[in-house]
Length: 430
Image 1 (cartoon, rainbow, N blue to C red):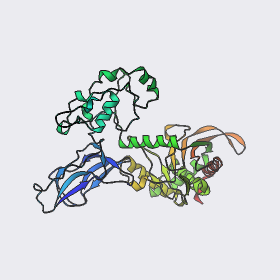
Image 2 (cartoon, rainbow, N blue to C red; image 1 turned 135 degrees about the vertical axis):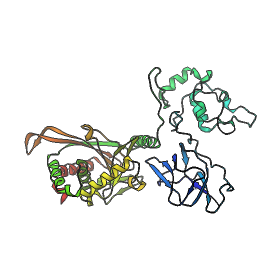
Image 3 (cartoon, helix red, strand yellow; image 1 turned 60 degrees about the horizontal axis):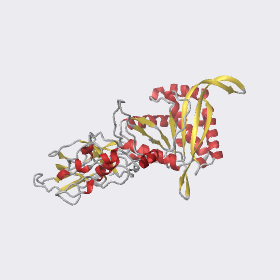
Image 4 (cartoon, rainbow, N blue to C red; image 1 turned 45 degrees about the vertical axis):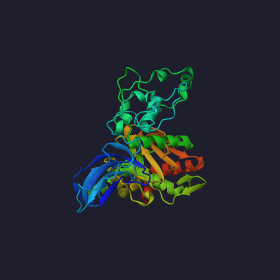
């Protein structure tokens, strides 16, 4: 019997994805465990394996298709012993309107806010054609045409049965009725959130947003709009921590383990959260979730965005274990090989830009977490040491807190606990 291969849900929150690449072609024989395709989710590009054995009879969704809904039939498989040539092929399940080839350089598909329009103009796209009562165009093409002032009746469609799709809008010119906006629309323009075109005469290119970048944009915009941030900043003397790191690395050299400064800062934040449990919380509507261990999400820059792999139970792990896990997670994050459970969750985050020479910055909270610690570079500065002014290696750390869950005094207690652990690092080994 024919087996439908459906777009899988590769994470609990995945609703759609991009079919980045097919690793098989029609006529190929596959068995359970063979790789079928590479699928791009909002966090990573993941490999999709076959579950059943048989022959690929039809690829329903071409590679490069975006916005493919979970559950969409992307290919069919003739079961073992079945004649692939005689296997029935189901009609292609409808893709999300966003599913168009990556090669299309049209601006990103995220739905923009409505553009303020000029005086109403009859919609020519609704006129009758010989094959039905309405001109055939995808909803996405209609929306983009409306935003750009394009007359769909003047555009020839390249889709099935002459349907107008997004790619057909390239190079089309706005209709005269919408090319010159009325004074009322010009007055309203500043408040519109439509994407602004590139300035004329300036060399540029339009790059389509990846699924990851769209999710980053959506989540962080939501964070700044809905989470009341407040910030607490203090300086930490790193001299003792740097000396301890050097001593520990000498002892760990035979085991092939090398501690980074960030490993020790992750440990310090994890212990500080256990010492100040009222800061290890998450706002949840009418409830406050208090965590009994510290799982730290560490921000890792990857091509096209960032991802936050999680080191669980930081307070209960040795520094060598944290260093080993952090190195492995960061490497696999850059290769797009993390499993969903490795970057989801976390009770707090840490973001370190010190390696770029950044002295201080304010990080955006990663919802639904209640705080994130932003760490700058350690550099030589005048600093009071044992009651006297001296030169020390000083690092500035800034905590961003969700005021719905964490009050100022509690945030300050957490920052003090973190500072104490960094400046007296032997206490982290106790």
